[in-house]
Amino acid sequence: MAASKSSLDLTLNVWRQTGPQAPGRFETYEAKAIPETASFLEMMDIVNEDIIGRGGEPVAFDHDCREGICGMCSMVINGMPHGPKRGVTTCQLHMRSFRSGDTIWIEPFRAAAFPVVRDLAVDRSAFDRIQQAGGYITVRTGSAPEANSVPVPKPDADASFTAAACIGCGACVASCKNASAMLFVAAKVAHFNHLPQGRPEADKRALAMVKAMDGQGFGNCTNQYECEAVCPKTISADYIRQLNRDYRQASAKDAVGI
Image (cartoon, rainbow, N blue to C red):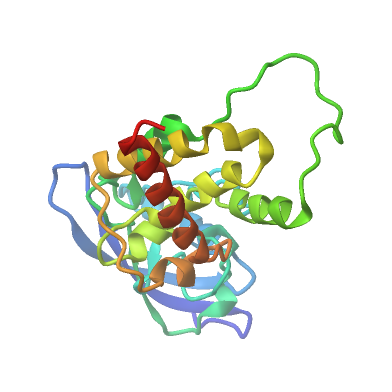
């Protein structure tokens, strides 16, 4: 049946891999009569229903909120993490961004630190371990403090808020030829280091999170800004410059025992 003006007929080349150590391959599927209003993940749901109906194994992919908040919907679509639209996650990408007759290549995020679990799902727990190394502040818990008891200059509050928008999806890593996690780490460090509550541990945080990043096997940053270009929250690579400055200062202090 031919696609209507509001639906698409597509050819999908999808990466299939049964496990971390298994060899992977592309398999081709026909996606017929896909509504232009469908999100990319809804399109994948339709394709999986067809695969299951024919007795096949559905394509595994991560998803949770489907609102651009959690970052789990990580796919490389036609060579671009999260697809061709700037400033959106895969779940926010809609099929009206494609044309009927298009061929779409769909792969998992590729990095040694993000091993494939199955098909399009990867293990991004390396990010969790970086967060655990320093993505917190040590303060007394208990009743909520008065909101205005610690004044925060607006530029610092804005910089912290922008950095906090990072959802840890890993698109920055998937786009980088070196699989660097510098934009992610820079955003997480800046989130706290810009605030008064985070400054007492700023040096310790920068050293610990960079060390954890290196320990997880991420590559070095060569400042080519692919990370900034594909970030669904459009976080600036300027945060990497700030992290480099914070790390150099913290390393110098650590070397002389300050």
